[in-house]
Image (cartoon, rainbow over all chains, first blue to last red; front, side, top):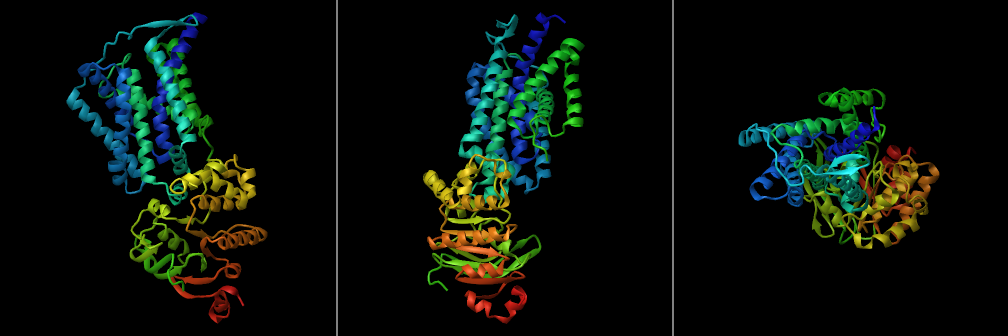
Length: 289
Length: 238
């Protein structure tokens, strides 16, 4: 196939992949620390998309401004959910946490279905269809912004985890809970901070998506399925793995869409998922058990 | 017995679920003291330590530390008060560097003196300085034990609980470890040494308690305990 088609497809794949990576980042962080898959991640993304949608619709706030309100708000929401709902309901058992997040996702999605109906909605922003030429391809400006912000968030998250005391405490709790408790780390606080960071990631992703995407009560599920693939591909709990895995999955999806037709683009992701599970179950950057 | 003990445990009961492990423990550690709790596997030594650090809830009885009742406190508050527990099996953070492990020792307490305390730990354990940037999981067993104690020292403990520091070390390293614990105590640190290694522990402590089936069955100075016929038979194999 001609390069003038191939290069734009790869670049577009990278742009999509970065936002996938951002969603996967939240999922992998929570998995790495709490050792559970947060089934409410998709519902939280949907809620964040609706929040960004209504902030634009009702308050006239641009999503790129709303992100500065929504990311701290979702951090607080995630913190409170873990600290006051999931944590207490789990009674210290990981399988309970799993069920509680599953239950939460059902409640959140159906509440949105009830209040907002099943309609698919979009917002109009002046830059929604702007493009810039990059390496012979015309790339969408909002999706370029999405790429830049997603990579920036990944780098900031990495810096937080490796440089700050709170970040080090998160990594400590992930691997050695008793040792962390005996060092004076408040484990339930760290769990809640981690959950809050995961929620903040989806809030940022939502603000990056909404200018070029749509929202309905089930939109988050599709993203989280892809994000879960990325988490496994990159290595469960690995931040660099989520970033690289996300970009990779974006490109695979885009190329499969190119060769097999747009509607079959995601087949490549799941084929790759099966191959990874067969040949490298610990993921690209994951630690072997 | 110290007149104004730093740690005073009275009638402590604790356990897991239906099972009661500790059945009324009384124990005291004074300022600058070095005291051992001795007993074989499964008599409740680790449960005692976990109860002292608030991980396992006290069901009955009281724990006073530095003039305050701590038996209802959560672990972070107990660490903040200066009671530091270096657990059995080291429990270091294997995925993090040696210096990050040490930094987290001062997460709750003495964070302001972090750099200076790290230097002090490196002076006590020069091996840790050589390995400062290495992942802690790649250290040898002896080095991991040094790191666990070093992490505890980073919090400027008033009392340090050492749970089985000699476990899994070579005889030579055990000797070295006990010598180091004695030196720390000589510098003024109060130590509660919880050990199976009766003979070597009795060589360095002021007093010892013998724990059996969740109760203290004997206590006294090393000389008193060494001359006790029951203890000789049960622990010293004499």
